[in-house]
Image 1 (cartoon, rainbow, N blue to C red):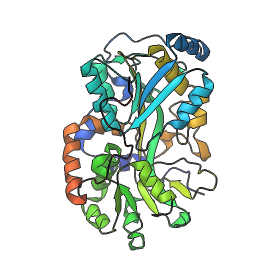
Image 2 (image 1 turned 90 degrees about the horizontal axis):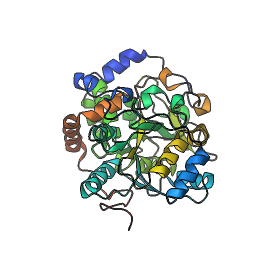
Image 3 (image 1 turned 135 degrees about the vertical axis):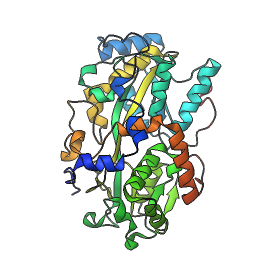
Image 4 (image 1 turned 45 degrees about the vertical axis):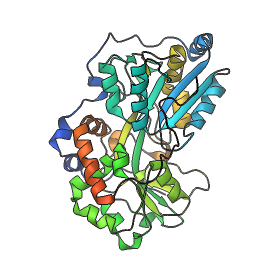
Length: 380
């Protein structure tokens, strides 16, 4: 079985080493510290069934933009929502978050917003949209169950789940005891030609992983990693699929459930010593949302215990939902879920890092893995 225990190395010292850039430590704020733009709303008091009736009276439709890197990545959420709320017509349109945020900005500038809700990896956008008055402040049902570090105090946005990137290996190709766990393990000559990685300059979450590794081990790590004949790929789920299909043995640029699916050879393992990457995926309703009641229903349902338990493959943002597979609370482990948000605030630093990694690896090759394009994704 994979290791569920926290790493033994002192957590604070490693975080200080890996996140040591002063600019990163001071940039940005935690979710609860964002300055209010308008009075905070009261917590939702209507039940899910009452919200359902209100959404049906509004028209029963909802369009959501979701960050992701394969087509129809949120099909299971769509299906569960429709099953729970009969008559609702929901479309969750997936694309890379860096494309969705630009798409939303263009739509807002044109005065015709297509989506009512967005949940994206680009955490800095939610602070900006809040400051610009673009978000509808809303505190969903069970607001008190959501950990304070994963919600904006004024209700402008919340996190709908924790995503952690770490080591994924194919147990048919690498016994779990031999699978790489810390960054230096990936330099083992036995792994040459057997690794797949997402381009760091194409995905900010992966960029943060590589920046942290370089902070800990120096740029020489990248020189040695390049000698491993890596398969570079666009998208983190595509990287996981390459490992799952047995085309490569391992990656650290993806996420996977703590408990593998039946007959799956994928195994997710935390590092033994290194810091690993985790963050809360942010979600918000837009002030100009075409379907406000449906959006409220959706966020209250996503935040509910019933929906969280059914879709939590890793940690939850709720204080009353335990992680699966015997894992303890996120705070027990060698990770800082707020550090990515601070990182995302410093766009000038991010652009410099992207250029540096592109110089080493080469430009990101291949089409957008979701196949989405254009300012509007639905014909209306």
